[in-house]
Image (cartoon, rainbow, N blue to C red; front, side, top):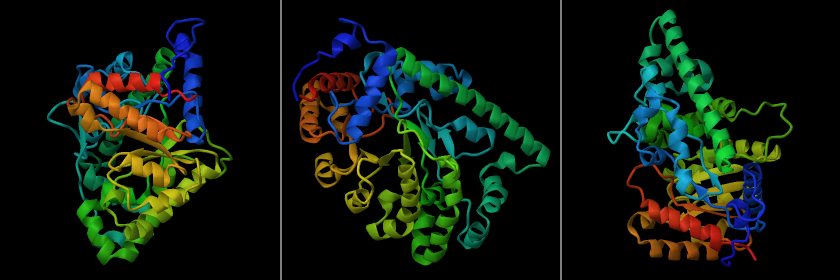
Length: 405
């Protein structure tokens, strides 16, 4: 890698200035090239602004709820100062207002006012597995939803009114997020790498039905029923994925994405038995149709690398959170593209010089041959997650330094 920034003449105003449309396409090509384990012109830099963008913009989640237009401002503002070639998601992904409308406490605004939390609420009993397996749609909508959403446990007329309010809220929110997607492209030439979600069947049961304690017990006491339920609830995973059976091809960009929840708590044996079969089937469907998958490897995955290496080459993009990225590069980096490496702890507690020095080490060891995207090791959520000046420094440094010869 050398510190050559000739391309900046076009991106920043020198020479024949590059249009935002050209800049956008250049960045998409840069990302696609490296995900195919080829060397692009330079290492792509990814920002992962979750709810951190709200506090950075001196707002609260409530501000966005009261005035949805502010979501545009909140999630654009960080890009005025912080360089990136792409950003991870588009706006506020999890929405406490939706939960309140239906009478659920599954998502709520934290005391700091700028983050949204998920609250585990176990609304399925262990002896109800036969009902779930026999008719997952009927069980979820007629039994679980009224338990989780008190305002949908009323008369049909009252339920209809609640649903109308929810759909109206979603209409406003989806419109704002569509405009935000366009705003990032038109104003900053910035692509969002996440498109649709690939939600694993076991995570649906873990997140919404049985919770951590319940599913831990079920794997030991009711393994056959749990396995059958995971297969049965694949119908919901397929619906969220949104790929009709007659589809012949899906876009190569943006990517499908999975934010894994239960895998980090599973042994390799449990993962292989319960989680992987239905999830792998969904992934191979995406691959067959020409798409790619982002796998947010939450927690540590060092006992599951064999599963990552079993996927088709150049298909998966793994965001490294708790694993040692240098070890990950050696053991799975030839098969899947790696994202991350920049320690969030160092960005919070280190000096600018220490951060830049570490960013250089990460790039030098992970970038050769392609298959690497520079980013923080975790998504940014809370106001104190890092020193902003450190993130600005490392992103600028990598953009200018990490040029392929």
